[in-house]
Length: 146
Image (cartoon, rainbow, N blue to C red; front, side, top):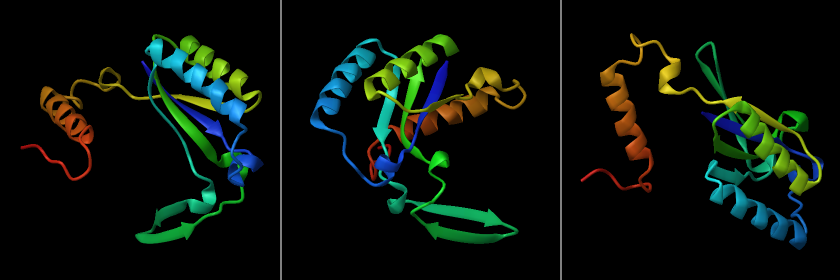
């Protein structure tokens, strides 16, 4: 099962403050461990919300708002996608990550898998289309299937 882990932003991350060199070293060692364990599929830090944009659609009207956004407890500083056997494993690796940081708050959300949908919605044809899209998503931008 896959989980999306979301690290909440802090005033420092929103200000673009880079962590000290020893944090990069600690995080590098943790990343080595979590990658070797085979549980992380993707992870990245996010730039502060001052670089962000929100796109909102209501009643047929699109509103585009550029950051920064003020409600920092609602903001995300980084994400990770875990492929684990249980929620407990996702919690374990998230706890380990927070221990490396020294503090912080993460939200874990399960990702829908094909088996979560009823067969009348996720037909064999839909599964085939999904597989084709995922293959296409794995290609670098501008490269299409030959």
